Length: 128
Image (cartoon, rainbow, N blue to C red; front, side, top):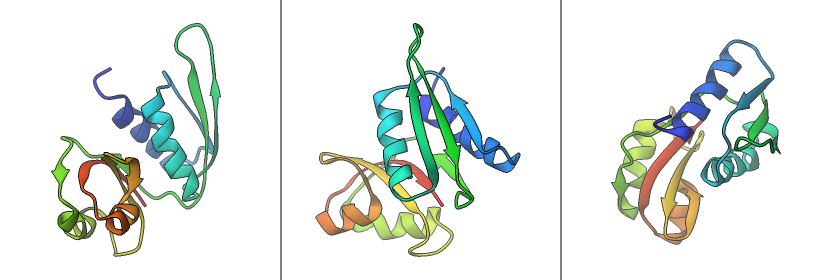
């Protein structure tokens, strides 16, 4: 599997579009769980649980009605703190609607937190 995050977010999006409330993502990773923590914090998914088995485990996710689109950003684009607004206009349908997840030296944070902390980083994904 080339990109676990891209595959996982695509699975969530396809499950949402087909009317399913639950989807399963295999295998689980720390990076994926950190992204799911942020998405859960902003109530785009109801909850998720990690189920460990002998082959790396998997994640069971309950999807909300709030989720319209989620997608990984490939290639990972490094941006400065001043460029966040430009990418917010490009990736999200409206200002203040949705989140962009960035990987910074402070860890995985949203674009709003990056503006407050005045830090840049690499674009990881967007959800709205």
